[in-house]
Amino acid sequence: MLKRMFVAPDPGRARLRFAARAVLGIGLAVVVCALAGHSLAGAVTGGLAALLALFTVTDPTVRGQAVTTALLPAVGVPVLAAAAELHAHPVARDLTFLAVVGAGVYARRWGPRGHSLGVFAFMTFFVAQFLHATPGRLPELYAAVLLSVLTAAVVRFGLWCYERRLPPPAVPAPPAGTGLLRVTTRQAVQATAGAGFALVVGQLVSGQRWYWAVGATWWIFVNTASRGETLVRGFRRVLGTVIGICLGFLVAVPVHGAPVPTAVLVAVAVFGIFYTAAVSYTWMMLCVTLLAELLYGLLGVLSPGLLALRLAETGVGALGAALAVLFVLPVTTHATTDAWIQRALRCVHACTAEAAARLAGSATADPAPRVAELEQLLGRVRLSVAPLVHPLNPMPARKARARRVLELLDECAREIRGLVAVAADPVASHDARLAAACWRVEAAVEALTAGRAEPLQHPDEPPAEPALAHLHGLERALADLAEPLRTPSGSRLVGA
Image (cartoon, rainbow, N blue to C red; front, side):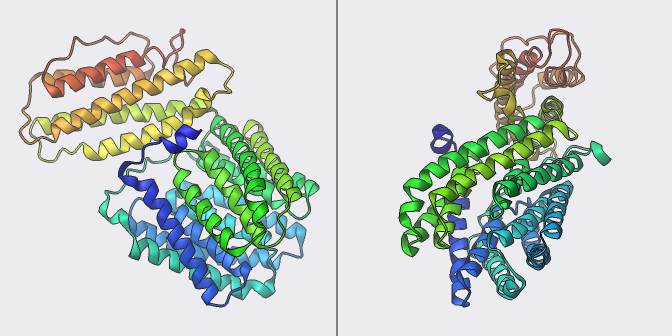
């Protein structure tokens, strides 16, 4: 875990800039709320609204990000009003909270924007429970949300919009399907069921902090697509919470909510959340737990008993998520992994075809977007395969095969990047053997994605010509993939 945190690559210092901008944007939002005369509760609401605006908005274009950011208050303000108005009506409040959970997860079917709006809606309701918001405090909370989202937008799109200098990232389309065959629909049902369990049991554990359990269930479902992914994420959430609570005893409790050291530690926790999110969910949860502890210290309610209660509620939420994915419309890890691997293999072929066309002299062929798409797909494959390669996986043979698949897919990606680099050279010449090599790559991909049992042939040693050398390396990797992708009976490993 330490290695993933401190040794993980950060191309272009993207994570560093992401985290530094978050500290700046959230800090300015809190200052603006303070200058506007808001109370501590208003400043906390504003800071969390700015955090969500900077963290959850992930549209591929800057224009899309700006539109989504502008829509956040349109979703958050009505939800905040409902949460405050229903504060004194527990049954109606709980049912509304579950409806927000289901709608928030279902909204992911509309891509990054739906995901962002769903998260903002849920967290707005959650924050209302965190602050025990009542109708009389709504005007201040409305103003805090609007001011903070505006401040975050000024920082993100005005002061420090580093995305304008970057090409838009490729975003793989979500898996197809209709009705209950659509993953987002099944997850909406699962998340609602899991949140219902967490809500009921969480209230039995604590009538004051029950929403922690619902929040744990919600965030375990974020960015997951299968049963295995959800279970692994739940384990990492509990682990991060445990470590964060232990750190809280050493850091947050001694501070006792003192303004200056708390502000410094909050900035460190915010930086950690944004910097670690892409590489380690455990580290991110450690930072989230520390941030929550510091905020409770500011509110004057932090104690060892409260930290123990947070751990208990997190466990309830993780259990709710686990029961939901195991028994409510389960989406198997193998089926999900199979789909992403097949899409990655088809993208390998598309990259090869574009690069070969470029080498053949085509002025319109451009393999770069395909390579970016392949990187995104391989990221999804790694996320999907994570349960199979997890240290707690009790099946060593399947774990070894899954690791071998990841290694060979990474090798395919390396050869593709090398081929594309050669194709980008304006003086690169076309070799007549390229067409035959590309045809063999196409045949290899078709055999793998169709699950045919015939063995794929290893090519001869690669020639000195760079493009052919990369193509032959790609052929060898695809030939080696045939064995780990299939069981001895001839079926695909991940679909078996």
